[in-house]
Length: 126
Image (cartoon, rainbow, N blue to C red; front, top):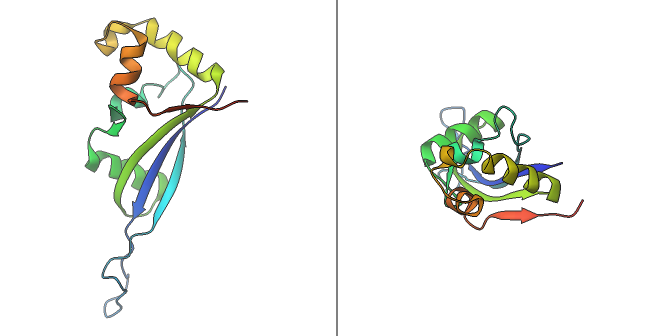
């Protein structure tokens, strides 16, 4: 079972020494960051509920703080791209969600997935 959150992260590079400059004034390379998704039902599995809304980062400042922790680099922006999963992960996720729909304030598993992940779930073959 495998799942990964995929983010597009814009890093902010600034000179560390006074008197040194770079062009443009702040170079911002963009990278793709993969964060392992916790197995459904285990600690951290509700990351999507606590961080995303309709397939977007719910709080950009918080998202940048998280990405800075993961990369130990200054981050200018972060965007959620998708949740990449295999079939087993998706089925386990749906099962865990169905077990407590009230925690998501929703009536169906599909509503939960749409509410937090939008259409940003990519199922990959094993």
